[in-house]
Length: 224
Image (cartoon, rainbow, N blue to C red; front, side, top):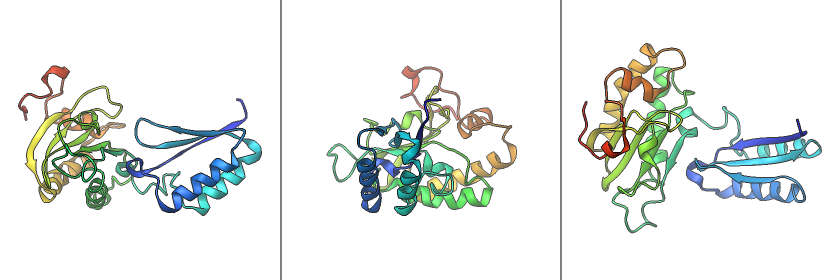
């Protein structure tokens, strides 16, 4: 109504790197005196308050520097919704990788999702390198907490908007075990989900995990 335009951009794991950094810097120069950036709680960035007269120029820069801002350029629904803490090598508390590793894991899971016809389905996946949980894995539909290098506890059943915590599903799993566990679940989700049903709600409805009804119970043993 105010004649201003806004655009959400994917910034994987919140790291603005390489040509994306150059492109966003040029957009910032273009928007001096009007418009700006907002950081989201999910490690993304919004280009905001773009006047109509500068919209085309901003769009040109987004395209020129291949800044992901459309369903086609954000690769997949899971990649759009991945969050991780910094973990190794920066954080001395981390037991396992998170920021550097989650895109690799998501890449393997994207292959499974592609085969199941779920590539564009938005699924929240989060990973943290230790139980301090700076990446908020407890609020993800699929969450991982590092226990040792290459080893994670896996949690399932959070809801898409973060109003229900997830539940411990498997302990001390490796990458190959994660793929083996999630592959048949994704297959069932593809064929048995209800209209508009998110992945976290599906795994609860199908009994993979009990719904987490109170935060004080989150550290308890799983009921699966």
